[in-house]
Image (tube, rainbow, N blue to C red; front, side, top):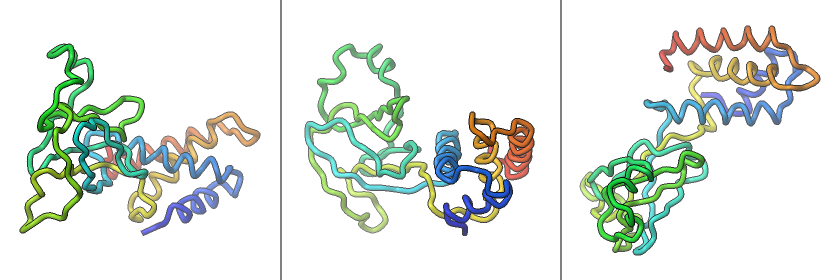
Length: 194
């Protein structure tokens, strides 16, 4: 396993320390945000959130990219967009009950809105005998890892370098950025990351 800093150091080694380290840290996160928004994310975690009666909006942990699936108890919730609910019921925001749908914002997928708004409260509780607690809100989500397996490190490094050397800067190098992009694409295909 490699830490985020080790991956950044590896990227610096590949470009003879010409890259901006702060930009590389941002690009590292960007690569995992991009991977986390794909249909089958590589890195996933589970979190059990408190539910408050009358509260419909919940925020995922700070390392979250987007929810993969959401449960109340052991029942999976359907994913929907606001316009889909609005087309079914104009005043959907005022409904209360046991949630059956979760909505994510396109601009910030780490914020969930439940429909209908829960009419009960629940504190996170561990599973009993392998079953999820009936009123818990359990979210499985993609996230930005601080440690990654060695096998994906070169893909991440070349994606970071492609972005670093294609952005406007005093060390911009379109040919180097293009070569890094092609190498990242090769690793993406070899690792079947699509």
